[in-house]
Image (cartoon, rainbow, N blue to C red; front, side, top):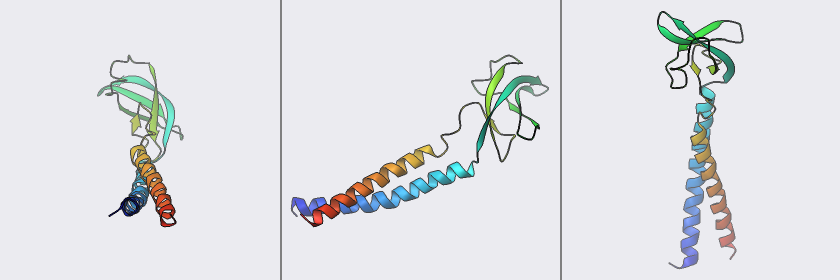
Length: 131
């Protein structure tokens, strides 16, 4: 097997694997981001209750929600301290004190890298057919 045939074989395998797996991983990342719903940034406040320290915030409808303040960002804050809160639009009682925008980001990025590799390998394969 000469170099030309080996390069053609490698580019064909990379293009098939890159395109198929890239699309699958990218769509999986979009699904994970979509299934987790939209996160909305709001201001929360640390409060104490009968169950311990909690974070309270208002949703878009004006309802008050709370969740335990057990994260490392909020566990040492005194009552009355403001804290940024991201709450889920589908289930407003869930919250994060760090930006949740990375949901599915690793899958989407890996999918895009594989798609790029697949497209580049496909281009190399087409060029090799005419050389």
